[in-house]
Length: 409
Image 1 (cartoon, rainbow, N blue to C red):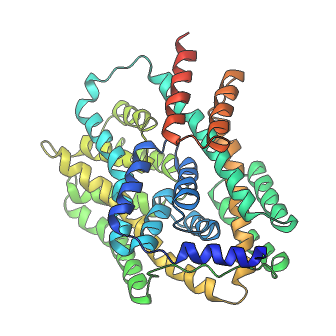
Image 2 (image 1 turned 180 degrees about the vertical axis):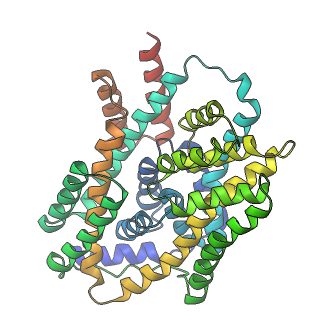
């Protein structure tokens, strides 16, 4: 069997599978409990779990979903997980993927809001730094794995390197979107003869579902401010703050947090100290950074309504990103059906590798590695993941333990 036939057969074996919501929930819950390091690291965990180990989708399809969600507002890693769950087990799978990945960190953030005055940990600095080093290892392993699959020839390797160089010179969300577009153009020019099966999704979104998701997204975006104006300081106003933050931000949790601070602290919802305490604790949590909404909602809720406030903030924080992902997935499917799509998507996939490669350096490396000891810890984590296939949770424990020892001694 030649390479093209083997690739087609392998992809058919992947895309022919059909799962259930229970298995999606189990895998997502494992990720929600162990995926430290922020959205870029989450994409590395996803690639390792859903592509390499579980083989629920191909590397090409995964890269396509990553590229799509990079172009949309909202939490990219949560959107990718939601769409993978949708692909595997339909709408129940999508909901299971979201709940499994989000609830562990959301519950921990809520408990922190309840018990924050009693939380003091002298080792927290070492723990937080160790989790950052885990992110270095996980993202590096994901870049290596995706580069092998998605950049197998000089043209696609050039697209990836160019995308990475552009972002290292001038990063930012708009530039990320720009290099994905440039990747598509490069793919149309240099990858027209790329062979391989078309990427298709099980349970693809229909026009009606996509239209309904987009309509609800816009209705809430326009309607919540009007409803909140009549009940200042209430749950509707809280829902409006978090929905607008989730709907209008590109770049993930670290970008949305300043926006939330500007909406909550000057408006008298909470103090700056309380906000910064929640932000700091969120750095130690697995799962999406957007789950900090559970803490913020609990702290800012009216007296006696901490749990409802956390639920409202959490739900409306994630809802716009998931709605726009559903609408975007339908557009992605239509684009993929066009004849030139294979070359363009091959170029986009290669550009995704460049995006992750740039993110590996900045912000992952630049905010994590301080000296040669950190280099040793991160390199050991990468070696354990890449060469010996050690489970990520074991790498988390080892890297955090090493970081705490270095911090204390």
